[in-house]
Image (cartoon, rainbow, N blue to C red; front, side):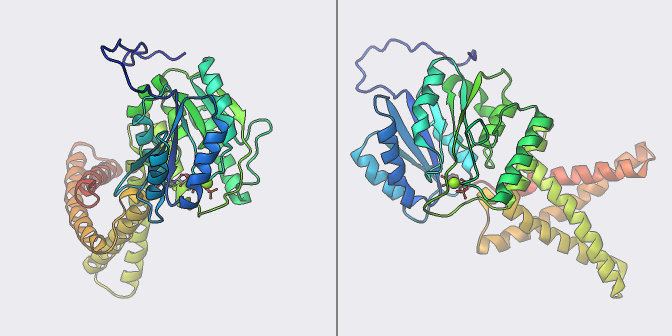
Length: 380
Ligand SMILES: Nc1nc2c(ncn2[C@@H]2O[C@H](COP(=O)(O)OP(=O)(O)OP(=O)(O)O)[C@@H](O)[C@H]2O)c(=O)[nH]1
Ligand SMILES: [Mg+2]
């Protein structure tokens, strides 16, 4: 079993009678527009968890379809049902972590809120944790588990490649590190929580890659079912987000997932810059004007890509998109000064031009990243 100095396992003796103990199992269900599924999930939990002391915490990112309200109505009748409404934020991983931290149960399970996960596996997952496991993963690729019903061929292929990359690069040795359904012992999770990324979809992979002590882990086959109601919230951007998480973990968290995405988009901006510069020169523009046009086109492209991907959880819309673009232009223009200054400094010390160029670009990227995270996409 995992040992952690900062988690006390023995409760202090209370000087008063407690009205109600915290349940043994908290099921955390992140939701975004899952109104048609909420009641089905609660019913399934009630039916599957007889004889177990449990609660369910829906963590809803202010869905527009009334999910929060529905959970609150059910919660008024059943005290085991709780709800966290997050405003101005998005993201499955962040919502899951927040839900896990809001409970005090000894065992925490994460499960989707769209009935794709078989709720009846929970008692066995809990039993295994009681018996000594730190982590139990409901796996789509373990023994009789399957994903073919719930995933398209393309997503199944993507999931397999992602699993293989995690195995090879991060030495994660489980059959389904992308699963969104697992149970974990609280001390193991509390020890890890400060190192987890609140961005992205892949919380289990983050847990497996971030743990310092080995977790006693077991897997249980899951037949991943098709979604019956509501829409998928996953899009093609998840792949880019996944690769960035992989890179962040490969650098031992030296680079955050957000910075990796920001830097990759910055790199793609160089290609755009050169392409626009070539076209502008070909159309007869003077070099300085062509260079400036290319810089602002590339910056604008980078702004929109970052808004869609790097800051998808804080995405700017409406008028804030315009003011955000203006502040992005200002910051990146200042970034050029940082870039040139640092490049010059290195160039004076070392004669290699590319080293000076890289140092300048690196410092410019770091400056742009921190300044835009504070000005353009400031957390509300
Ligand atoms: N709180 C919160 N929950 C989210 C967010 N995005 C997705 N979810 C929930 O996370 C769970 C998994 O999302 P899905 O869209 O079902 O992802 P998936 O199961 O891989 O995709 P499908 O097979 O198409 O359903 C669901 O319960 C969603 O409602 C989010 O930004 N915030
Ligand atoms: Mg789903």
